[in-house]
Length: 204
Image (cartoon, rainbow, N blue to C red; front, top):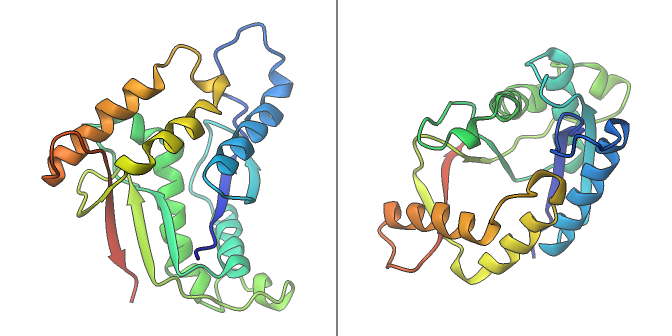
């Protein structure tokens, strides 16, 4: 089977729609929601980096922190947001998502495989370089691969529903049907199917 690790960069403190909520409690709420959503899809290994929400920028510190996770987890594949803005799906192009996608690529190449990038990772923490073989990007304006998710759509809906603080007025089943049926149509799948779209490339 596959082992999946989630690396969540921001703490979600700028999220939520309840004006009466205690803002200091939001990060813990968001973590609980993320853990619950991960459990729905069978993921139990989550890493939270705790960066402020909505203020993410490409920095050497963040590149180092993602490189650290890659060297710790040693994944064959990294799935991340695309760093390019997608004007057909603006929601996929949240500024934090764009930055996360760029930093993930910097960490995949060259940082995590280069022993002289962030040298403290090797010299102090003992984390040897690691080469990720493949990257799958979500939200890309130029997808080149589609995965039929029709048979697991209910689990996707259940996972998204766990993020209750972010979706109080959202019809999640309708959103999933609309967004992912459009991607299935773009892939040429039969009517009634749902699909995720990715841009996939090898790092070799």
